[in-house]
Length: 400
Image (cartoon, rainbow, N blue to C red; front, top):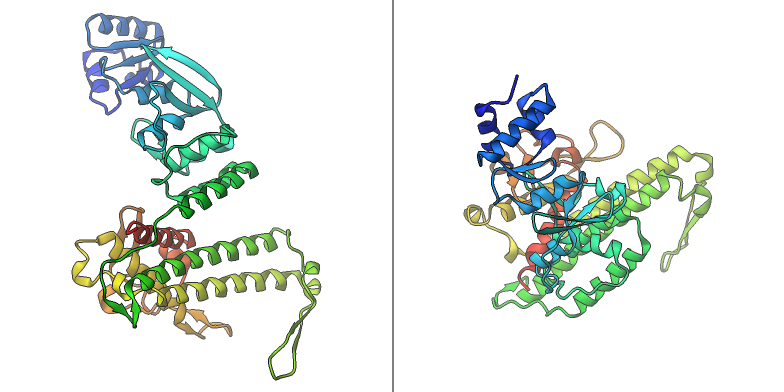
């Protein structure tokens, strides 16, 4: 098959504005590369293609420069000052397009300077915090902030108020960099030290607690729950990976009760490593369950989106409902198949349907879960609950 007018029109109809020679070769199924090059030269002269540089073509001169940037070197994504300036995190203007890639180099193409900065392959190929724009990829503002810290020991950011520090902290582990961790923690403390106190104009009461206090208590409970879950997971991982060994823990646990004899529990974990790890798993589950139940009970009633308000705030309504249903399941413990009580879904008729949090990409189908044993996989994993938790935290923070 050779390239003809129909072939070139099919290429021009695609969403892409920039094409490599390889892209066109694959799209046309042209068996003879030299013939294809002659054909392309013809269409360039006819004004139906625009030649950017060797091996790169566009529909016309108005092609997307960011798209070209990520095609010159692959894999790559737009990041650093290009994103930071657009998001208002730095104020200095840069005409250069900055790109994260596998090597450091600068290229001037068609009057545009592209600056490629090398980052480790494990970071470059990790898609966390990378937004797919269809024809190119770009870092979120949190990822661009961390990319910049990764390559610069001392960098001045003009305005960090738009950053979501929960997302920053969630992305931080992919860099495996202690210097960055210390720096991010310093920025985090400085940022929160300069924040205004939470204010509410509504003078209503929540269980005889002023609204302002109720909202602050809710925010504190959500954040504490998130911290407890992170802690429980990390402690459990350390035990299962052998970083914490049975011999490191006391064989006997002494609990001193007031006005009573001390309780002594003999725990010789060194005799049974399997039991040690299994108990760690159970402890993590119970710790997380207790934290979630406490968190929901601390959620101020004034913050709940009512059923009749679902259309106005569909994502928030879904997030709050999923949180409540998970809490109810964890609080609905039954002994059915094992000696150890397990949580079961307890879902009201009106909630036996699909809930979607579009902004998080989470879909929860509660149609047939009632009275079934609770599994984190039902909600897409514990990670999805953490996303919901962070979403609820951010929703309250936006009232600041």
